[in-house]
Image (cartoon, rainbow, N blue to C red):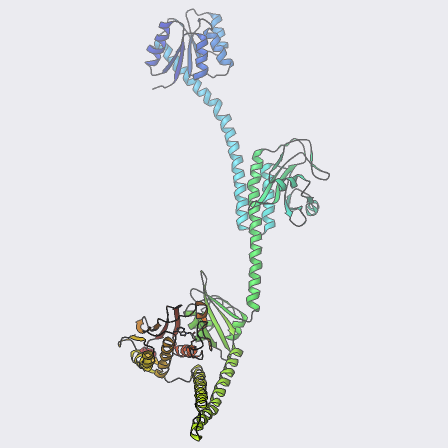
Length: 640
Ligand code: ADP
């Protein structure tokens, strides 16, 4: 069914209704009606019908005049005239007015319909013939241009990501700018922050020498204006302008280059000859290319920054006297510096990517890498001792840094030896003092004041003796003399230790509670030392807890360890002092002088715990109490 729209213009009501409704509408056309030429013209302009059927003789405007106006205004609507009296003159005029057909009344409905159909088909074919070639060609041309622009932009983009050489990328950018805008020449100017001058970093069609020596003050040039304002400059084909002394151009586009909002330079194209203008579109293309240039410059700067830092870091690692070993998550070497190589006799062969255990077969190092966040002393074949510290590194693996502590260990050994010798040698004179004090009273009567002085001498000598005993103990444990270890029941050791201090606790009216199951796994230990360790902790708990307090000992097994806790309801330890309480001779700030002690007890405790491959830590609240926890590995048949 046809859906074309036909306007019927006739002053006769019957004719209008007959043609529009009885003939055309019935044949399926959409119809519009007007009862005179003027309103017919108006309706035609407003609604652009596909065809007009107009009576010739009408008031205001005749059908012929209507056809003439339609043709003059290039409305592109075919007109069929209907007339009561045909004449040769009218036929000629109609032909000149481009009328498609004309009918003399009366006519047959079928004839009119056939003419309508044919006129519409011809008009449509004609429309297509006119429109298709010219419009398509224009669209094709503009698409071709856009495609070329896109291809160039993509090419430059690919260059930015794949080419590391900045000069090459920037040259490509300028070349693309020139070719996409059809300009005579192009340049990329970068701002030197120190001198505030612009230099030509890349150029196309500029004389080489000119480009190399190009310098522009940024405060009084067109390019400088772009730098200062951050706004582009577009000069149409105007009177020539200077971009540099004696360098005139007729048209030009400059766009700013920005990195993180900071302007670092200018990308520009220009024409030195007249008659070639640039447009906003060219400016937009330059902006896109400018972004690529900025990205390339930023990439290059970031790369050289990283490279500099990498070289710096490599030099530090290379030169440092500490040994450094880094492995990935599969324990494959990422780095081993010369100090570490020398320590483990690793030759200069490439080792990156090889298994650690294969390159550094030292068992202590391999053990260390298997337990995160630990320290270990490592003794080398040549007798040197390193303190190695392992640090997990997120996303990379693990690193071990090792310091040579051989001389510190030697100093420590000499000091311990000295202390042991002195302590030992002091015992004899002290025994003599104590002995003679005792003899004094037997040698003759002493008055009460003399007796008091003698008691004081005895107390002092006893506390010196206790100190010496502690020092000697410590020396012996640290020297590792307690090699005799046996399978030991923790509950039993705890019972002995608690029994040993029961009297002291009772003397202060304290409650001594023990909760250590007999079923706890066994330990591999020196029982006497374990008793000494628990004894020290218990004595402290009693000493630093006021009368009537409670001392509690608990024991439990957890994974492959036995955890013993000794808690009290006493003075507590100030948080600031807690890290130091295991140091020799350290006593916390809240310890009054009347609590007798040497400050060596916890050092002995710690040495014993470490000698048993265990750990000890403290939790304490001032005036509420303290809990020491000792963690010892349980005895395993297969490790015995
Ligand atoms: P001391 O001979 O002084 O008791 P230690 O080495 O046994 O020496 O203990 C060091 C210090 O730790 C003590 O002087 C004391 O300040 C503090 N301390 C140890 N155990 C306790 C405890 N159970 N409650 C409060 N303070 C304690």
